[in-house]
Length: 52
Ligand code: SF4
Picture 1 (tube, rainbow, N blue to C red):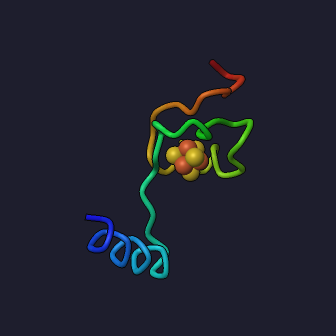
Picture 2: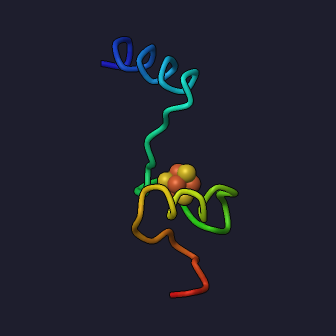
């Protein structure tokens, strides 16, 4: 699966397409500089948002 998936993900990243991974342990305002943009673009809430 990794052999198939990795090239697709690499190509998407080159094209500027990415998918959020909110289940990541590093997904939070503390660890991700793109958290506010990610919320605006994809909706939902990222951990550590002071507005909660
Ligand atoms: S907030 Fe950052 S780590 Fe979490 S899904 Fe969005 S881009 Fe990924």
